[in-house]
Amino acid sequence: MAEGFAQTAAKEIVEPSVAGVSWAAVLAGAAASLAITLVLLSFGLGMGFAVVSPWGNSGVSATTFKIGTGLYFIVMAILSSSIGGYLAGRLRTKWVGVHTTEVLFRDTAHGFLAWAVASVLGAMLLASPATTLLGNALDGAAQGAASAANSGPMAGYVDTLLRPNDPSAQPQGQSDPRPEMVRLLTTDFRTGSDVNANDRAYIAKVVAARTGLSQADAEKRVNDVVTQAKADLDAARKAAMQTAIWLTLSLFIGAFSATLAATEGGGLRDGTWGKKRSATAQSSLAIN
Image (tube, rainbow, N blue to C red; front, top):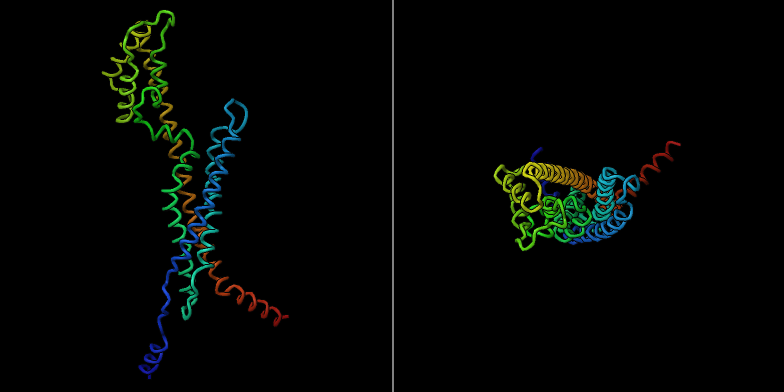
């Protein structure tokens, strides 16, 4: 008897011929998410430069700007991922003969796939606008090995080191030591967190020869500049770490928003939510 029921149930279970993933809907949702992200990035770029003031005690502070930028990343992820996930769920092919729980899982997977495709393509296509929005803090940390003596991140420190004590007595006809010192400082800070003793002594001698300072004053200037450079680099690293944390948090929230919106869109696609509302209304009328 039991075997007969099992055979009958096996005959009634037919695997749908439609694929479980509607890639057209996933790509459409990802494209919409990318477009919205680009628009919001451009808007955030304009708003960010508009609200930050270069003067002290006016505008927003650096800490407030970092928090505001991080919150904007989260809002941007929620909006773009929700719209992309909703489109992926609403535009997918209707699965006939599939259990409700399986349909819910597939809708969730469509939202997640739309978010994943948009994130991967966005990392490649939107890298330039995103880097511009992050600001000079990330640029300084990422371009620590710049080779240009006049435009690298160490050029300003070298100018401070070689500033003559008496500008009118600046030596003439000597080769410019800036490129060499930029290379020394860049290499030392790239391979470690400080300038090694040999390079520090050599730089102090060059500073004394170029500026007319005594050896003790030259060494003091080198120590002061190296300390300032270390503080600035440490601040750039911390800014990069905080920005990475905000980006990671926004990605997680974006994935959740995409999956949730896809289930909503898929339910409206199949009329599930409408049926549930009708059943609820009928039950309430029956009770009354």
